[in-house]
Length: 267
Image 1 (tube, rainbow, N blue to C red):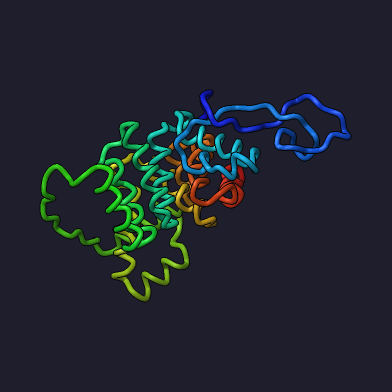
Image 2 (cartoon, helix red, strand yellow):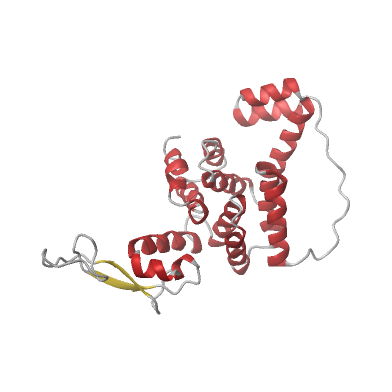
């Protein structure tokens, strides 16, 4: 977030100057004089000495993205920090993920709510990413207050997976049709893990779909379009989906928006 305390960052002023003047640290490449803003955020990138010295526009732009994530907007800040943490864990930037998760916890995100990221990564990105995030949860929140109770495994009823696929997509996607035909047990597993991520999570369904959008945006995945459509169907606004995509910027850069943000108004 931006504040007015220390560490000056130069950004362009609206006024002009003599065209014969040479650019210096206080002017941009078009000879526009610069004004200063102050950045005090503890974010590591915003504290980069080289960026402060050489890249005021980069630093100032990133500060604006951080402001979107770190303050309440269309989505609450604690939810956006969680999305950013899960996206960073997906990319294996675990220090970044830890910082985002600590910020979410500081804003009131509970362990059970944050564990929705563990559920999502278990399904979407597999055991490695999920266990890494599980370790981060233990680091930030400590161990669970009580020992987990033994859980009985759930089995899908015959035909339940196919019915769920048709309900969600309106048809059975070709990849899942093949899975149903070739490895029916695998199709049941897909159904159960997808159900756990979207329908039986610790967050509401809209938030689960938005978190999927953030993680898929961090991978520049065209599959984000599926969850943009699904998020809209459960009440997500364009502004909420846009903020979810921008939660991928810390781990995937502005290319995340170009890959997934463009899909929002295309639907």
